[in-house]
Image (cartoon, rainbow, N blue to C red; front, side, top):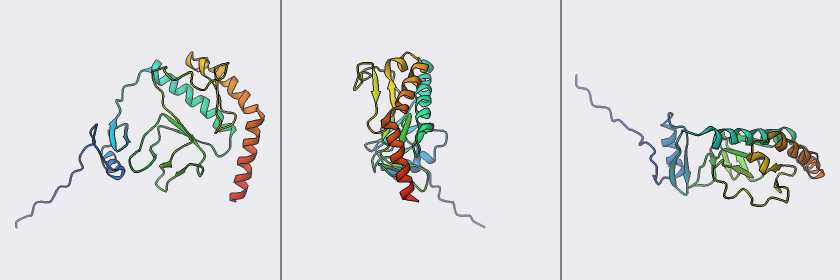
Length: 193
């Protein structure tokens, strides 16, 4: 009995520089479970190198997550994600180091558990210090306008002084603006029920 050869359909691997739609990017990415991190930016694939140094990336990333987690625990409805896939639009699907958002404002959590839209805060850890002084006050503190009470002591973070970072954050959490923000979030939650 003769057998007919089966048609084998293979999925092309992702390659740096590929120009793809978001759907094709996701299809190929899912077919490569060994690939740790790839992003689609303006329709172009960027495969991220996996080796990361501890002092220039790992530790600062951990410190930022600790700072953000403390804010999240004090603020209802805030979602904190570490390296999530973000479906910004048809040509952009990054995996930032961290995101903070309130679902329903600018971004949603899709039925298949991805972020759809632009989170209010996206963080990338970089070894460069070119932009660290942007929008800080005289004490080197950044105060979020989108997330009231989210205060960051930039010099302390850069030098690894996490006790100071958390102390400044606690001052932000105790500020009137944060208390008013929580009240507004609780009112919005009541309106949804």
